[in-house]
Length: 362
Image (cartoon, rainbow, N blue to C red; front, side, top):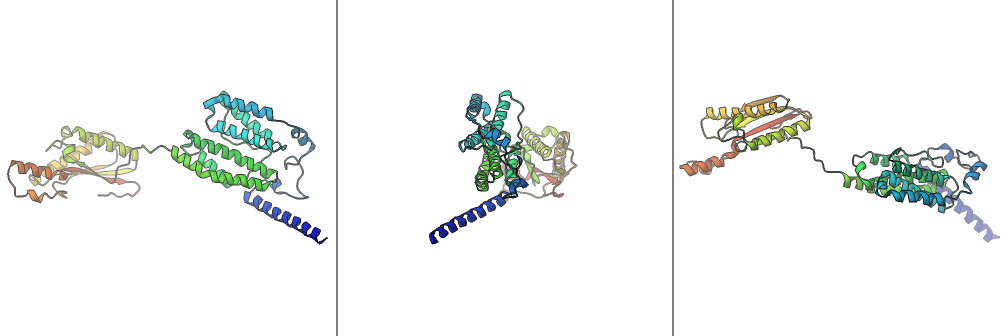
């Protein structure tokens, strides 16, 4: 008798532990359907609550869907590469879910609903029409873990999703698996439901990785930095500052800069400063530097830059090169070496004011 009581106590304790685990799984699933949350003697007994009414049993308990599964599989296989997309992947996952539940003798109607979805998607692929990324509301499934659903749907609206078959396959099957988990919850098998959701959660990093791999590099023109320096000798002919003296290389550089300014769209002002080296008179250097600044300003305006542009000749101010080793040396060759050494001083600088900061950087 003592042994019998001990066995009974252990059975009762096991049932209690299992019941607590099931309740914890149910709560973690965040089920929204109130009828699914009802348990015990007072639970609702109707079709919506999943009760096996006589009409329900007559419809599903004798169903044998083996033929339907094989027929839909043949239709999908016949599509070949046309099924290698979100809709084809989802149709296959629905078919696999139906096959899985049929093997477990599921007579709740989920097998039939899964086959209906697989057939509907196959028909859309066959006719190239009537396809939708929206998920169905199955009678035999409750919504579980809304947060996980949001993650899946966020992946579907990624710019890379449309051209990423791997992400499409993972997302489509994750959606079917979440609905399958909802079916487990609908039948009050909360532990099995939680296990399916955990599997989907673990697959989410794979979806993110697939999208990252499919994201093309950003090929848009880069917005200009706060200051751009154009080397004078590569922009204008020597000792020239007019438009006719603008070299082809200089035009190419300015055209690229114009494209980047237009692409950026946030340049509110441009200041152009022309510079010369320290050779020659101050008056000549101021005149030449001002001419080059004005020519660059005019080129920008004539090519569609509408932000306010100021131009100023700085002469030989703010030198970048020292070239002290050439000072005091005489002769034609030494003069040429000095001119070459002072090349960095002969330049045009463009300073940009951006809407984001409202300040220019020099």
